[in-house]
Every structure is written in C-alpha cells, then in structure tokens.
Image 1 (spheres, rainbow, N blue to C red):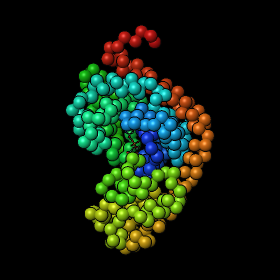
Image 2 (image 1 turned 90 degrees about the vertical axis):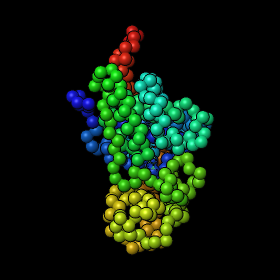
Image 3 (image 1 turned 120 degrees about the horizontal axis):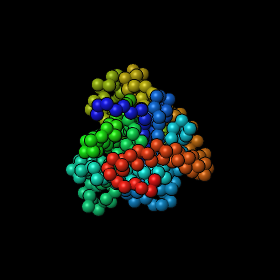
Image 4 (image 1 turned 180 degrees about the vertical axis):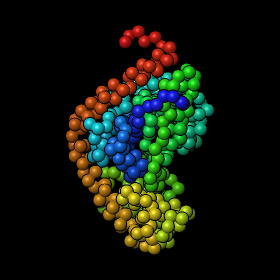
Length: 341
Ligand code: TYM
C-alpha cells in the first residue's frame, strides 16, 4: 500500500475457553497493558464468537467470558483508556467475518497450522467455524483499521493471513481501504512452553494441569508445578547460546525474564552455573509475587459479575462507534444496497 496512512491503533483478543495461563499473560495481556501507555488507541476483546468454534458448555462460556475480562482488568487494562468488550456484543464482527469468508481462499485456510494441530486426524468432524476462524480473526482486526496486533508467536500466521485478506480486498475493489496490520511479537516468553514437555506450547486445553500455570493458581500450586517441571540435569549455562538444545531450560529462563521484565541474558548473568534447586524456587517466588495480586483482584471482580457486565456493555458501545462506519463503508465498496440507514 502506498498513500494512505492509518492512525496507530492496537487490537487484540483472547478466547474465553477454559482458564487463562501464564502463556496468555506473558504472550498477550502483560504487553497490552504496556501498550496502553504508548501512542496507540488500544482495543481489547474477549472473543467469545471464537470460543464456540469448539464445544462450550453455556455456563462455562459465561464464566470464562467474565474470567478473561477480570484478568485483563486485574492486570491493569484501564477500561477508560482502552476499549474493553466482548465480541458478540458488536454484531459487525460476524458481518465482516462473513464478507471475508468470501475474500479468503480455501487454499489459504488449508495452510493454517493451528487448524491442522487442533483438528488432528479428525478434520472432517470439526465445526465449519473452526476452519473459517482465521477469517473472523481478520475481521476483528480490520473492522477497526487496527495497525498493530500484539500476540504470542502462535498467532503470527493468522495475522499474516489478515494481511493477505486486506491486500486481496484492496486489490479486488481497487481501493486503499484496509491497512496492513503488523503482528507485534516482542520480548522473551512469546511462546511459553508446556512445563512437562518443552516441545509443546503451554495451553489452556492440555491434558494435565501440571503442564501449565493458571492465572488463578495459588502460591503452593505454582511452587509445586515449577518444582515438578521437567528439566535436564545440567546447571544453567552462563549465556543464551548454552540454551540452544535445552528447550525446557530455555523455557524456564524465558518465563523468568518475561516476569521480571528483563532479558534471558540478564537472567543467566545472575543464575549461570546455578542448579535447578536454586533456580526453580526463585522462579516460583517471582511468579507468585507477580501473579498473586492479579489473581486476588480477579477473584474480587468475579464476585461482582454485574460490574464486569456493565464495563463490557459500555466497551461494546464504544467499539461499535468505530466498527459500524467501517463496516458500512465496506458494504458500500462492495456494492450492497444499504437503504435502511
Ligand atoms: P488465544 O485465546 O489462544 O490466546 C490469547 C493470546 O495469548 C497468547 N498465547 C501465548 N503466548 C505465549 N505463549 C503461550 N503458550 C501462549 N498461549 C496463548 C496468544 O498468542 C494470544 O495472543 N485467535 C486468537 C484470539 C483472537 C485474536 C483476534 C487475537 C481472535 N481475534 C484478533 C488478536 C487479534 C486466540 O485464539 O488466542
């Protein structure tokens, strides 16, 4: 794209499906809070329409939606400074999502590694929504003309697909309407790994609770999980090159760096040569120090769901004032008759 410039605007989202993990915190929420302080308009969304691409028990969906909103608020997302809402309360997401289903190509969807991982050998039995999910994600982002999308490493391919959709739309209709959003994937711990298997991502849906730290875990549970985290027998190296073939060690060092707001180099400068008996308790202590105030505040908010609902309703109204005109212009560009407005 050449001429048109877009105001710096951040959009990002989290699915309310199951509990939140340390991966969600370090890969997303913590950085969202920091981006509020920078020169962006910031829009953060509980993407409930994405959650139902796999089965969600209605009561669980309801609770998870509150939990994700509570996590964002408790971590420092300011509902005045940022727009915070849940996706299904702004119908324009689903509408633009449909239009993008007609822009995106089947071949593009077939390349999405997350679908392949989630669907496994059972692709035929998955919902059509799970397959089309990346085009709804593109709609989430482009509905606000967002320019920056802070996500963990696992979402990079979806943001790239968003750029492909924007580009094809602009090209097909001969317009410079949608921006090319940038994924923002910066700092350590952009891919927090499973504590039991350093080759797998830490996720909300993994089999065993021992493989992840949940944002609502208490201090004892956090300490126990780090203590039992898989590692090799070697002490920590003194520089990052020494982590090359040690995925579990690297993961714990990156988690420490992410929590402490420092670099893996700095962590190793402090702990190089130390054994796990020293490092794991230090890591657990740091995690508890950072997460305990957040989980306490989350619990307080979860006991007042009406307060969360009010904030989400207000956020959805603010989101819609941006989203609706962009959706209407999209309909106009495509030639739809919109005589009701
Ligand atoms: P979701 O709900 O799986 O994850 C939310 C955010 O947390 C990050 N994350 C991680 N980061 C580092 N290490 C991990 N182990 C880890 N696990 C999760 C994710 O990268 C993500 O940033 N499709 C998205 C939600 C979405 C979205 C959007 C994001 C829908 N529309 C528009 C950005 C913009 C998802 O399923 O994220």
